[in-house]
Amino acid sequence: VWCVLFSPFDLINIEHLQLSTTYQFYAHHPHLSDGKQLHHSKRTSSSEIEIMPTENTTDTNLCSSANGAHILFATDEWFAAAENLLNPYPPTFVPDLYCEQGKVMDGWETRRKRMAGHDWCIIQLGSSGDVDCSTKEAAVYFLNSILVDTAYFTGNQAPRISIEAIKLERPYGSSNNDYFFNWMPGAVSRIVRGGGIRGTGETESSIQAASDACKKLGQWITVLPTTPLKPGYEESRHHFFTISNEISELLQEMGGVTHLKLNYFPDGGVARLKVFGKKLPIIADSSSQDIIMPITNPSTGPNIHPHSSTSPSNQLPSSLPYPHPEISSDVRGGIGIAC
Image (cartoon, rainbow, N blue to C red; front, side, top):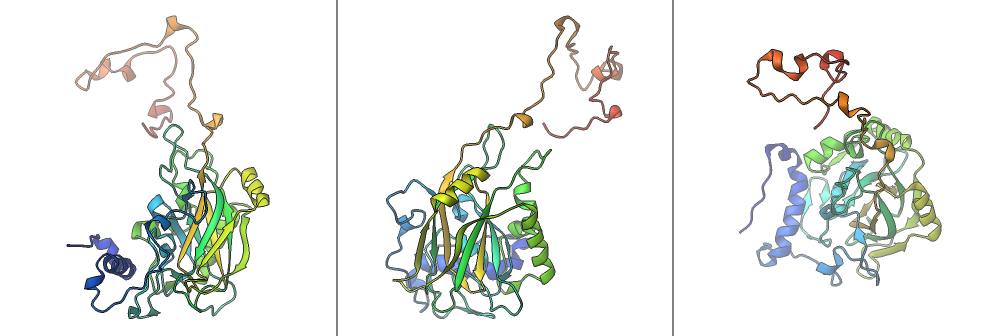
């Protein structure tokens, strides 16, 4: 027995849901595939989902949707949405599964470029426990290695890719972590919608706005220089890279990483992107600590006035005389922000 649950708002993204639900259902019920033969990699297993192929298995896949990673923007998603890159399950292939745009692929695939430039997407990294409860600061990460999987993209894989990284700083006066998302135009609505929509592409103006938003953040660090990708046959699908010592030093100077930019040169597809690393310990910023105003003379305060909602108005603390003005009063401009 199985079912798919979605809200009416998700109806606009039913094209995206069709692919993931089809793959996951047939993967668990191959005898009900109605002739749709699933081709799984012989090397993929449940342990490969979040563990890189090295002796060090303590790192986390920071690009997994299971760990809270998100796609904030993608220039083009004509054949497949960028969220597939973050899928924690191994890539699959259904030979006779097609859509209006063509062959349905399990990855992020863009159409051939008909204008200057290249395709790219923005990834917000994630891990379990992304917010430190003691400081309310969003997590920052250190990168160790990268695994690019082109499974089943044989000839239509992205010819070359590069990856850049940056750390977002909390804006002055911000009391939450919304800035992690809303710095990129359209990111919040994309996440609420459930991801990108297959068969769509961004306009030149929206791509320019997203590019400008990236530039405003400052200098991005190239963690993977432009690198050619091999087709997604079993013997050539995995591309593993270790972050160099030089890049590691730059990341340390930057204070860690929060977001990545994956570049396709110029277009094409990739099945999965896995970036392995660790969450850095958060050091509280003393400038953001609560301001405590000490009572230098205990004999003059504070005064406690027991009251309730049924107390006469002239007995409420706000109605009683004090030797000093009540600067928190809304009459003097005080505003309740959070509690």
